Length: 306
Image (cartoon, rainbow, N blue to C red; front, side, top):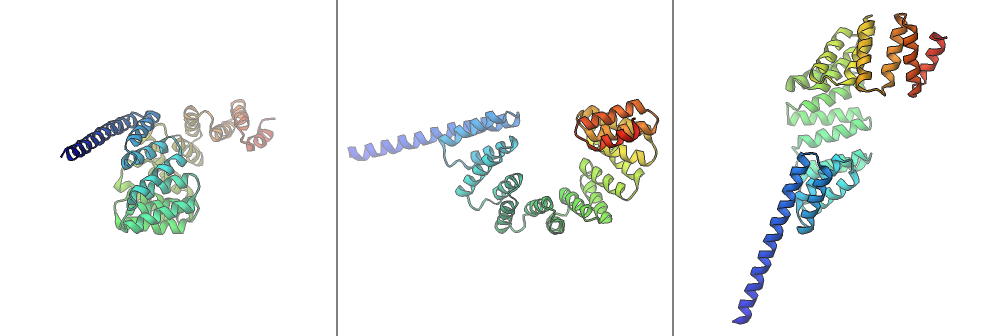
């Protein structure tokens, strides 16, 4: 009888110890989430690590620690955490995608595709997985393959704005500009504040010499994101095409305000100033571009500045 009571007591104490350990691990886990939300990523990693030390099979802690490492560009560390999640829960489709994305950031595109395809094997109607495969194929310039995968993602989720946008990019890369614009239109239809879609559509219109249409799209992108340097840069080019040189200078100046090391903006502004007979100022801009490594600037200096 005493042995039985002793065994029961040990079991009770063991369970109580486990519960206390779990509660403390959960406390660290919640603290990690809070630090992540406040962008204290290193602090979040430390808390998730403490949670894992207390509960070595804590799947959510590994997953969140991996996501946090991604924010710090520690892709190898993130892959290790995602791999641990997969060991503990091999049927977790989403973590294959996140690990695949981390692999793509390390240019392990083959490994990334294997992971994304595994996610689809586990969840055949996973639109996000097809989107990710399309994105990776785009990175390796397999745009026809990317288009097929984005199309599958759209088939599964008709209002998938990002799939329309990136499919538009792939169409543009293949010089199929009409389809590219149609996809940017759909992306904007489903997400009216999609800044990048306005930029992409503006770039495509510029390719088609629709400079006024391009300026309108770049202006909308700037309205949505006033510090969008690429939109100012591209709008400046289209203003040049319409002989609006002062407007172009204003846009290039804004780019320089936002990105002081943007050699393209100095180079282009310099050429426009020279066109307006502002030789001294324009040549200084070309010189600045040259200092930044824009070697073509020196060729223009030899032509215009001596």
